[in-house]
Each structure stands twice: as structure tokens, then as C-alpha cells.
Image (cartoon, rainbow, N blue to C red; front, side):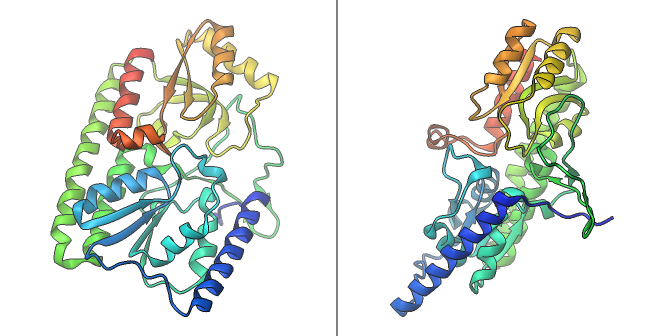
Length: 329
């Protein structure tokens, strides 16, 4: 079986736009007769596309690294398009950490567009991957087709690998090892910091396991996209949701709403969940019809500017999820 990542028309457009920006950027630098080389301050310069990678890298890098987050706080990751400044940052950094899934398909265009000497790390290469799935009652993507006569069986990979704390810890340790390879003189410090943060995530994992061992139920309903399949698989949860994790849809069918409402009513599920930056109208509608309440589950894909300024971390956001599960499951 051949497994590939399936790209839609919007992703092809992103690649085209990225290629155009890269071409213009390279021409501009050539015309100026110089490259915009970053100042050598003795630190490793790291660029991360999404918040989890940024958080893991800044924990491992400490004061020895300068870490940049490309995805603007509060932005929708699936519709992100790189700016010329973003492209330049990627081309000049010592380490570029990206997800490797459909949401950053534009990356390949940037990496192929100009020579760069820095290292790259794909988060999806650090862990075992799961296929995105459509469960009972879930709204399927329009035109969704699992067969391609030229490519064979097409499987869409669920890219939200960090939502499992076990995976998050593994990615953090891999980042520490990668930084040590890039800067051997401070290698031990990178690995020690990465191990310390991974240890915090390990404790978070144990806290979730302890909670679910005695939880009143292990079924969750999302009136939203479901980007936490790795989390659900890690803790053996059953789930129902309006859309798959990478869905671009926002309005489920009447049949999906009816199915989820009935599921909440018949199984006496007290809470309908929604994710960050959602308007949670679907969750509100289901909850109101079923006599339930709603609550946030933060997938950590991105955070608000206020959360970033307040020093939010993957661990603190996931601890918030644990507290809300204790109150609402």
C-alpha cells in the first residue's frame, strides 16, 4: 500500500504563491548584491512553523538559541501563507522545524527554491503516525476520495501528532538531540534542558492516565473539528465529532447535528467540546438541544497573543485541558 499526503486545490495555490514569493525574494537579494545574513550573536537561530514546535524548541534551546514562531498568534494554521520575511527567516535559520503535513505543504516550495545550509526537522518523522479517520456521524469532506487510479490507495495522515503527550515528549527529546548535533560545544546543555521539559510532559501524561483510570466516562463529543485523535488513541477514548481534524468545513449537515445531539442525549454526556478560536456555534447548538453544557479543549495548535505574552506553554495549556476534563467529563 502506498501512503501519501493528499493535497487539494487550495494547497496547490499555496505552493504557487510561495514559489512566486521565493522567486521575487531571490531576485531582490541578487539585485542588491548581498544576502540578508543574520547577525552572528553566537546563538542557534531556530524557526518553527507552529506553537508546539516553538515551545519545545525554546525549552531545549534556553538562552543558547533564538526561536521564532512563524504562525502569527491567533491565526488559522490551515490557511496560513508565508510572507517574504517568513521565507527569508526559513532560508537563513540554523534549524527549521515544521510539521510535515498538509497544512504546511508550502514548505517544500521554500526549501527547494533556494540553497540553504541549515538543518530541517519534521515533527511527523519523530513519531508513529495515524491516518485521519471519519467516524460515525461525522461530516465527510466534499469530494473526499480515498482512491486514486494513478497513485493507488491514498491515505490522509492526521498531522496533529503533538496532542499526545507521549509524542510531545518524544519530539522534545529529538529537538534536544538535533540542537546538540548542530552545536556540540553546548550539546549537553541542550539535551539536559530537553530532558527536563520532556520530564514535565511525562508527568502530564501520567496525570491524564490517572484521571482516565477513574473517569466517569471515556466518550467525548466535539461540536467542532476533531484535531486530538492522537490524544484519544493514547488514552483509549471513544469520540464523536462534527468534522475530521483538518476539515475546512464549518457547517455540518442536519444529519450530523441530529446524530450528535442524539448521542449526547442517549448517553447522558454532560459536555459538548469545542476547540480554540472556534465560534463554537455548532457545539452551542448541540448542547442547547440536548440539555448539555460546552467547554474548550485546547489543541495547542496555536495560541492567542495574550496567552503568548503571559508565558503559556504546551504543558500549561494541556494542564488546563485536564482541569476542564475533571470538571466537565
